[in-house]
Length: 488
Image 1 (cartoon, rainbow, N blue to C red):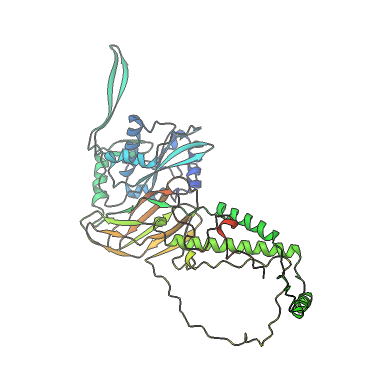
Image 2: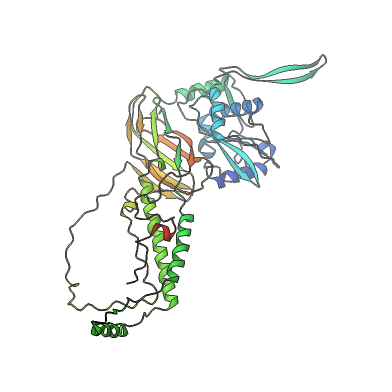
């Protein structure tokens, strides 16, 4: 872009080489805008102190800026944030006013008739000092990108005061208008800028045309176990601490006095329980902790097979050209999410809860009267573990989960359903789950990218539906045969 003077460091952030993605990074961007100078708006960042997102002027501003950022020169745009651009509403130099939020999905639907679906842009809200700020990330322009133009007339009417009284004045753009980003402003493209966009269009012979969609666009969180396990733990601890050993009743048959005296003598020879009350209480806590671990492991296994808790994605080839070896990478951007190991075996069907400790006062077991054969090892049949093979690999990162899918071949206009990925999302996770994706092919120039907003819903998984007992029922109602102490 000849004739444009570019500042080496156009912002109060030293490192602008990487995009801002995590909430902490977006907050840092908002704070940097507040600390910036009015002249710091550049080819990659635009801000607005306040804006009514539901109004026509608000709609016009968002459409205008997104189109302008999408029509940048790829080589020039790559100098900042890997080519990404940012539009912030609710903050400006020296001011943090915030903005009245609009649901991101509703915002996307409102702007789509004017922008279309091929421009990659993602709205997200961040909270700074109790105020919400809208941050819109616009994806990087790439060689081979088409010229982006307004798809529908967009005008607003303003009342202006004239000598003849107030008059309505229309302001906006007609369908087909080409807007382009300049340092600190967005205007109609001139002749030189149109020529740059034509060169950009011709720069790549074969360009990837893919879109990744979530089907369905929602996912369930993990079931809430904390309250369930806390209630069970409290009841079971109280029951076990109150348990006392009761010796078996002595025989009172007067016809066999020898048997009575023999039983009494035998009981007299039984050694006392060597455990103290503190040791017995420690055994109870160890038992309860093991139960909690086993139950959580079983629910994780159930969640692995629960389809509504799977990330279900479909890769769509929107063009006429087939592509080979398309690799899709997904980053679920939340530290509250982890991927479940596909080889996880424990579930409620094979849950085997531990036995509780014997009641306090229970004498130690008497040694067997017959010879022990425990030293004889009976071989068990060898059952090799067959690992589950998946078409994806997951890596847990501090900011979330990174999932890489095996390369696939795409025919023209093909829709390929990717293998679902089981996720464990922390109960109570609020707001849409941000899923950033990229796709690249071995025989195509550049890559496609975007962000999917997944709605997180409460779990419908029946907790331990196949377990022998219902842990959330009181002990005297559910029985807890497998959790009851054996008085014998």
